[in-house]
Length: 241
Image 1 (tube, rainbow, N blue to C red):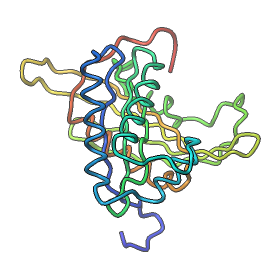
Image 2 (cartoon, helix red, strand yellow):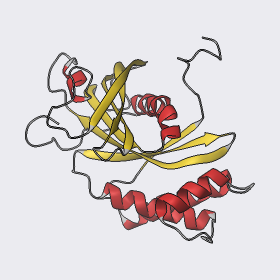
Image 3 (cartoon, rainbow, N blue to C red):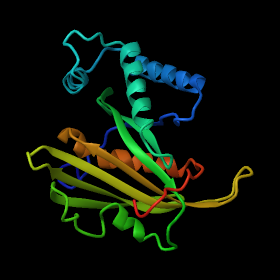
Image 4 (cartoon, rainbow, N blue to C red):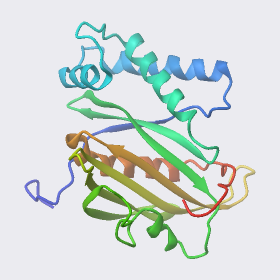
C-alpha cells in the first residue's frame, strides 16, 4: 500500500490503559491517578501541544488562563474517567486512550467501554449484529446514518471486527461511532483454566480529525486486550445488548 493510497489508514502512536473498577479501593484509585499524573509529566516535559490546550479549553469550558500542568490535567482526567466509569453497569468496564501526533498527546482521554461476556452462541456470527455489521440502522433512530466501514482483525487468540459509522442528529450535529467485537479463546496458563470469551467495545467521537484515527487506535486496544486475559464480569440481565 503506497503512502498516497486514499484507503491507507493514518497511523499514530496510541497509549491504552484501564480505569480502576468501581469497587477498587481508595488506595488503588489514588495510585492510579498518581500514575496518570506521572505519564502526563513525561509526555509534556517539553511543553504542551497547542491543539491539546485548545480542545481542552473549548470542550471543557475552561478559562483561557487555565494552568496547564501535569498535576492539573492528570488529576482532571482521572476524576472524569472514574466518575464516568462509576455510571457503567457491572458487566462493563472502561479503558482510556491517548493519541500522539509528532510526539505530543493530541487527544486524551479517549474513553472506550469494554464488555467481557460469556458467548451467547457457539457461532460468533451473532457478534456482527451487536456491532451493527449485519443489518441496517433501526428505523426508530432519529439520527441519520451516512454509512459504515467494516474492518476485520486477527489476534493471536481469535478474530474480530470493528465498525466505524458516521451519523448526524436531526439538528445536524455530526459524530462518529466505533463498535467492535471479538471472540477470544485463551489457553490455560499459570493455574488459570482455558476460557472462551466475547469482548465488545464501544466509543463515540465528535472530533472529526480523531474520527480518522479511532479505528486503528481501537484495533490496538483489541490486540492489547487479547494479550491480557480478564475474568468475565457478572452477566448482563435481560435481552440483547
